Amino acid sequence: MERVPILKIGDILLVSIQVDMSDQTAVALQEDLAERIVATGCHGVIIDITALDIVDSFVGRMLSTIASISRVLDAETVVVGMRPAVAITLVELGLSLNGIRTALNVERGMELIAIERADDDHDEPDDDPVPEPTASP
Amino acid sequence: MTSGVDLGRPQTQSVGSDEDVVRVRQLVRTAAVAVRLSLVDQTKVVTAASELARNTLVYGGGGTVEVTAIDNGRRPGIRIVFADSGPGIADLDLALTDGYTTGGGLGLGLSGARRLVDEFDIQTAPGQGTRITITKWSR
Ligand SMILES: Nc1ncnc2c1ncn2[C@@H]1O[C@H](COP(=O)(O)OP(=O)(O)OP(=O)(O)O)[C@@H](O)[C@H]1O
Ligand SMILES: [Mg+2]
Image: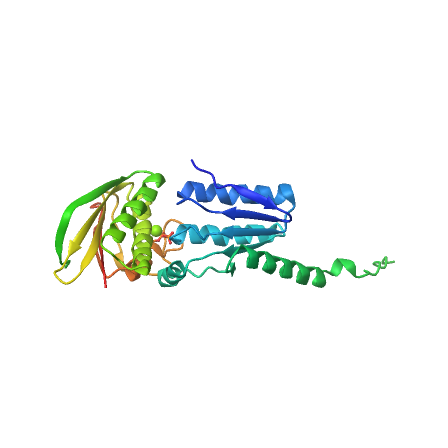
């Protein structure tokens, strides 16, 4: 079975899907990514689908699952490079890529992740002094 | 019913593994380009074929896909038949409902594929297998 390579660029994992994936390859990618997020501590995942000429319900579901898994592992996923014909077809198929962030290209995807992370840090309550819990008598 | 004459020999691909589903997509893509479907229509018919071939594999227990270039005198098109001798579909209306699945999928394969093509014909009965014919015309 073919495996899709995962590249680490700074704090981001980049997956550029260059082959027409079999269902097994798609499932393996999902698992490989989860492992790499934990192993590297990366906070962003970019999936580049520029080379994909179709996204069917299986791959669409894989993209949603990757986004959910990475969120649980404290990483943001952005799907980039979706072709217009693919977007049109996905909508007609009835697939709403729920919870998936998209951007035009890898560069924009990286910007989006940087903005997301900055916002997250802002909201982070950890930095605020937390009052010591008062011991109950 | 379906219409149009065959142009040339149909191409057949057996479906017994998920690698075969990839091969079906490639076969349909090549045929769709050959009959000059627009880029969006190529994308739609390859996506529909991917959904139906996967159903043939997963629910039909495998089968065959036959791809034919056709012409109805006014325009060319592509016809694809997905056939299996699996359990068949007991309640077709239900199976064609968006979101209905017995396999933990999204339940969009059948209903979505029907929306993506110009003609959609399905013959199935419990214990009789399933045979789905789709057609996409070049505009
Ligand atoms: N060739 C077939 N033989 C028997 N049953 C089938 C066949 N194709 C589809 N079905 C039945 O119809 C249901 C709906 O199919 P559909 O492709 O719409 O959804 P799914 O395969 O369950 O999910 P998805 O395609 O969205 O991943 C299936 O769950 C299955 O019960
Ligand atoms: Mg299906």
